[in-house]
Structure formats: C-alpha cells, structure tokens
Length: 144
Image 1: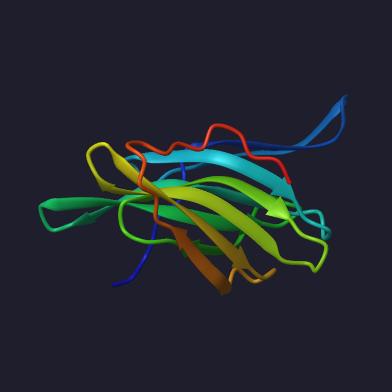
Image 2: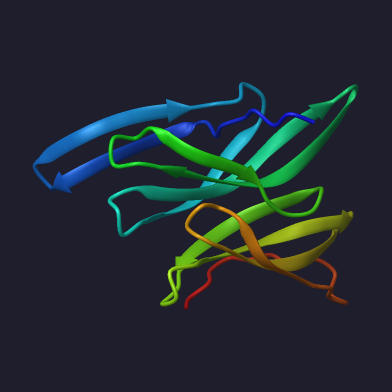
C-alpha cells in the first residue's frame, strides 16, 4: 500500500518573536490531527499526530510522524504504530533518537499505550505496546 498523507494544520517557523520565516498547511483531505512537534538540531521540525486512511469502504486511524526541514519542506513521513493508533507526544533523546508516545484503540472504550523510538531518518528502532487492564487509558500530559 502506498502511503500518501499529511496532517492538516499550520506550522510556522520563527527565528525570533519579531520574524516569521515560513508558514505551511498540510492535509490529506480527510481526517488529520497534529498533536505535538519538536525542533531538531538541523533547524527542522518533527511532527506527530494521527491520520485516517481510507481502505475501501473502511477507515483506519494510524499514528503519523513527519519531518520538515528549516524551509518547511517535507523530508520524510512515516505511518508509525499499530492500526487504530494516535501519536500524542514526541521527545528528543540524548542519543539523537526521538521517542513517540500514543495510544492504540483496542475496543470501545479500551485503549493501550505505545512507546516508539525512531532515528533522525524516521526509521523505527523500538516499539513497545503497554497492554493495560484499565477501561480507557488516555495520555493527557507526558514529561521526560
């Protein structure tokens, strides 16, 4: 399956409070949600969120990550995570990798939490699914 999708939202890059370098809008045109973004050491941005894929008459939400360069151009984008998943947070780690945290819906109203590690090129390094017994695990705030 070829994956072509971007998240609908506004990303703006600023050098200072006084100057705006660029503004971009991204969308797949169906259901998209950006949840978090973090600056990278090369002046770019990694964004995580959720997109909905159309598969025949069915739809499936999937966690999405993509990287923009300092000009706002897309460097890479990856569908990360299990089916029915949403990414909510991204953190830069000291070893030049990024940790993404989100949830996977396993039934109404059941959710499991996932933690992923990617490298600077968006390649998946590690993927952990925390299966929970709770009714509805939701990530509201995560700190490193």
